[in-house]
Length: 477
Image (cartoon, rainbow, N blue to C red; front, top):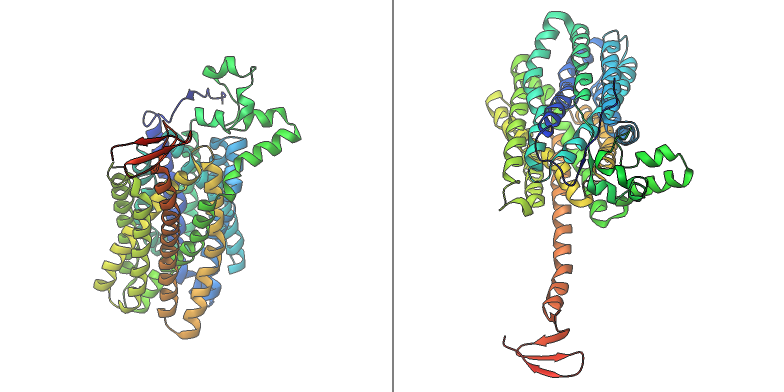
């Protein structure tokens, strides 16, 4: 393949090829997040075939989710220092290999390695770079672009959930995994769409690019890598590599990012068990297999609505500065939905849960990259998202087995769902408290700033002003 020419833009183009990037990211989320969600449909089949309890079977989904998130920084690294296209294509090959090999499984441990670790690693190389690329192409319509791109998870779940159930009925779980392996190969096509772009903001954050030898060619950059640090890699000096890494991860000690990262730990713990155990819980209440799979479809389609509507609304001028508040509300309402779930014990009652949980799940998922970008900026977005998804890994690994242990111990799903709900509510409360503290700290600064006349360098108090030179002056209030 010919090396792609990379254009230099003063700001994200907010359109053009950017919509192809959105389409590519959309299908990446279909092939990664939607397929991961559909693993829960195999839960009962795996449990029955291998004669294992809830906790041991839940490790399959946990390892897949954990590996996807834990290896997210690796996806960012490959994207930054090779290219986004290479990362996604390589990830597609690995994920497909993991699903195909899983169809030959002879034990749960085999599935831990193939369906969990190998497939999760492939998804990690695809997911973070694709999401970061959308942020590079959009600024004014960033939330809407992310809403459309992230809706792939909901649309994919809506379509794949009944399809996977039908495939299992026709070809058994082995045949279904084999077909999913072929489907996931479409990630390679998505990777080919990710045309590189260089923003002026990235040049500012990379002083090496501002040297005279780069300046004459700046309007016609033909970099061989997609990273802001690519010229540093080409120089291959230890000092420049260290400087590049320091720049890429300078956001990590920002107070706002630390609080945001801590909140993601509770969010990740709370959001996983309801998705993993919705189908088994529905079956335990007497709902048949097709209706249980249909609940996942409803959850998926409402996720689409949440992605797009919240993305569009938070791009409006009157809500743009309240994105964080919208995010907090969505997370909090998702937590409340989990608290109500144990009391819903029939298909007609579980449908409203799927509608509510799916909608607000889609809403806050679409805003995660936007909120992160507002904190760290566009230049560091790929690395920041890698760290954000890495922080999801431990809760994703532990929450389904812990929930499964609670189910095995108590004989009920109540404790598992209540713990998930309170975890998500605590995430929302933590961020809300952080915003209140920031507002309280800013108030005295704002008051002191309003009492200074910057043009005359005077302190004002009512109608009388005293200048630095010691002269009194009469001012109109």
